[in-house]
Length: 588
Image 1 (tube, one colour):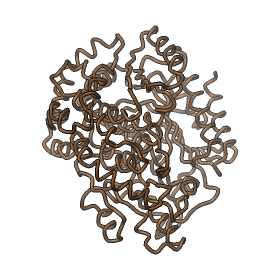
Image 2 (tube, one colour; image 1 turned 30 degrees about the horizontal axis):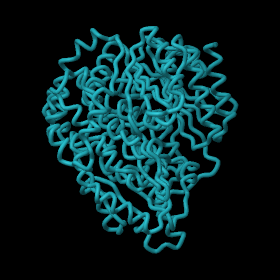
Image 3 (tube, helix red, strand yellow; image 1 turned 90 degrees about the horizontal axis):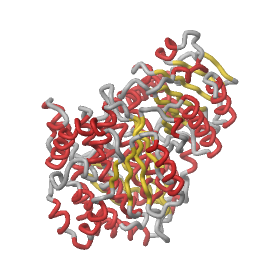
Image 4 (cartoon, one colour; image 1 turned 90 degrees about the vertical axis):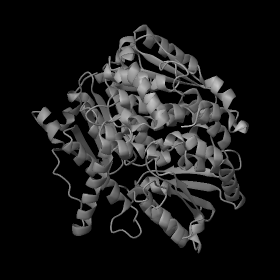
């Protein structure tokens, strides 16, 4: 890794030194967890050195695992590559704007798509630049909602492996739209972001995509925000890529080990507290942020969950859960407050944070100087997560249970191809037309096999995960969020919420590989109007249902307590009925 001195001086136009000065005191820790932090400090210091020097032995003693980790540490050098690529990014983006493209539709999953969505939400689209639409869903309604004028739309196909089923299915759909619109050179409307030598790399060149951005293969998807996966979309939105990259270099320079103590290091200190808190039983890392940073919470959630949720351990990230009275929280929480510069409502959040401190809840506060300092936060949280992984004695760079869910979906789709139907288990109960199916673990824990009693299985230290395979309907989202808040307030447990299949590539790793402390409600619905997938015998609706059932089967195999509620249609009233039946069993 390059020294802090080189990071500060190699790109004078990026003003890295001034940015570093603003970051060095951006992390604030409240009293508490002193003993836990002290006992983990030595490990955090070794991990910081291992991150900086690319030493895999920090995370594993196994030679094969060390080789795998060595092939996943390129993210530490990625900001340097982006700093050297600023001119290319600007030139490419300017050509897209000059050629009259008004919309960019990003087709990706997990880490390949969440960082651009955060950049859109936090930094925004510059005036006169193409609008960015992020599509990481196989729900037919979501696919329709991403429809733009094909002749003025650029499609970014982002996939590290090039074989992920969701972006490839979406690409087939939009290629067909271009052809149906009579656009002969449809490849001019596609750009690929992938690793070298992948199937997508070969396809993009053979089918004459407008451009191909080859990312270093030693960068994992969830650590790819500060690579072409994040910076190409940023440039297309007219964002100041140089500023974003400059902030990331500044955080790298501020995080060099040895300059200060581990706890005072703005990145390593966060990872030290995360890992120490989890080992001390406070494994529910609860993000508190202004609405403008909600999308960033989703990115942090996928990074932490997929990196640490394995081998029966892990940090459970809680994003998007509104603040409550301290009495609603258990002793398993660590709060991390993100303070956005000039964000509305900070005074109210200040009061809530003070109330938490008064009850001796551990709180970490992070100052974010400006929107483009998102580059620094990407870097801070990546380093922190790697450090926390070392403290928890796990490999933070693999994701074994993500593949498990993919394999389960593949088995179901193969069955559909052979028989024309998906194998669906017989439900345990029905509620106004909604089929309710229990996993074996939930059935054994509920002697009367009453699926509606699922929430009675929640105990102190557990978390509730609401997993929804539905489209972008505000009415549906409102019902789901109402249920989430009610469970938090009544059961006094941490709550997670995720849309499928997005969460399969992020928090899904934690659900199956992390601690068996989750209680899951998985909701799916028959689409009102389906969409075919060109070149496939199954539709988007069938693919989405196969992914829902496949994940439920994976929860079953992992011994998780879960209920699958399948609705006859994506109806808010049906979700409300399920919610009322579940909540009735746990009172107020």
